[in-house]
Amino acid sequence: SGRLGHGDEQNQWQPKKLEAFAWGKGERGCLGHGEDLSNQLLPKKIEALAASASDQRVIAVSVGNLHSLAITADGAVWSWGYGDSGRLGHGDYQSQLLPKKIEAFAGQRVVAVSAAASHSLAVTADGAVWSWGS
Image 1 (cartoon, rainbow, N blue to C red):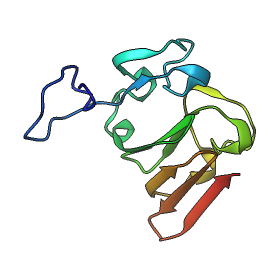
Image 2 (image 1 turned 30 degrees about the vertical axis):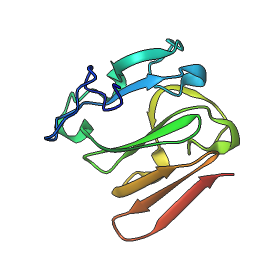
Image 3 (image 1 turned 90 degrees about the vertical axis):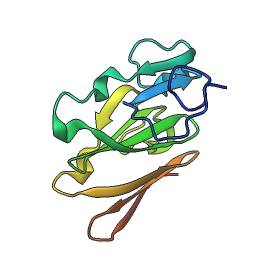
Image 4 (image 1 turned 45 degrees about the vertical axis):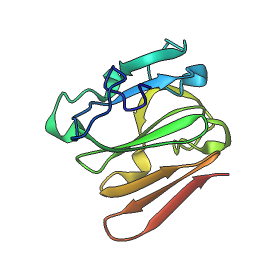
């Protein structure tokens, strides 16, 4: 049914490498494709997270109701989508059409994230748990 993001409807019996892609309902920037807010029926690469450098490689993602989070290999967290309730972690309510690094984690290594309906969570390498939103 195409849910694996490989661009086809085949089952995969072995892991297959993916880059950061998003598809589905494009409203409020939740897919991270910039000004293109259209619905995406097929996986489309999130160009702002393309692996231009080894530390920019996405190692984990989490998808909330209208926002998404990604961790890159350098331990940075990026968020995009609907900014209401402060769920993106940028200290404001602004929506982000492209992935934007959460500066509050500068100097820290984030190892896990979770995006929920209107809030988000992160765990740093020292075991601290962080939350933001409402």
